[in-house]
Amino acid sequence: MNRLDHAVMANKSIPRVEPLRGKVLGISALGALTDIIMREALRYHGTSEKDVTIIPVGDEGARLSSLQTGRVQAVIISGIPRLTASRMGFHQVIDLAKLRIEVSGSSILARRSYLAQNPEIALDFLKAWSEGSFLFKAKLEFSLAVLKKYVANRDPEVVNIIYELNKQQLSTKPLPYVRVVKSMMQLWARTRPDLPIASPEGFVEARFVNELDKAGFFEEMGRRYGN
Image (cartoon, rainbow, N blue to C red; front, side):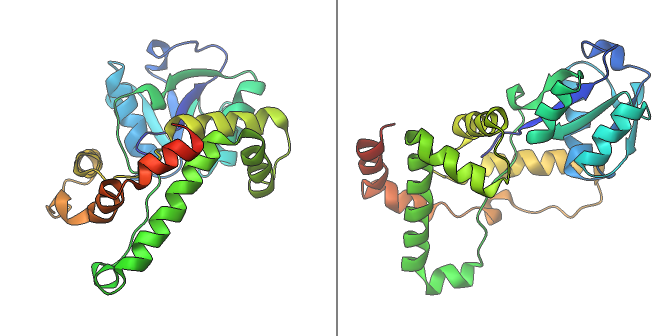
């Protein structure tokens, strides 16, 4: 997943972005992902971070509570809390999934030394992981049952929203992109200019996915499950 599933939710008196100016906005912690992408989302909508006050208020439950009590006028949240906020009557003023912001929201990391010693395990793992993505998109009832089990929520509306969000964003060919790493580095540098410069290419290893692609694995999955 190279897109965000976050949203900026605001109180009932703020139906769009412009009235956020002069208001207090809640994030999880200073320097965290929520901090970085909140500032970036504001920039995309022509609002400077200097026009608002951004404060750390904790996890998503604490952010919703802060919005309820009026401590903040808007918060950034993701996943199920977005639905909860909507049910509570708060407005979505920014949907970050629709912005041209790329981050590595779901990744598999491994040591290069391990991959060098165990290339077949890496390939087998990627086959299983990728087939799971095809199956998830193709088998609705099966996937909903899996979600109900692992998100510990049986509310049909909640589970269906989670399914649709993931179906839209989940890639069935999980290529790691250098451009996504560059995007993350650029975002991080806005709040941490002191970080040492590193090569984006050093964080990406596309060889294994490319091998599966050349071998026709993804075409076979497409035939089996549908594209």
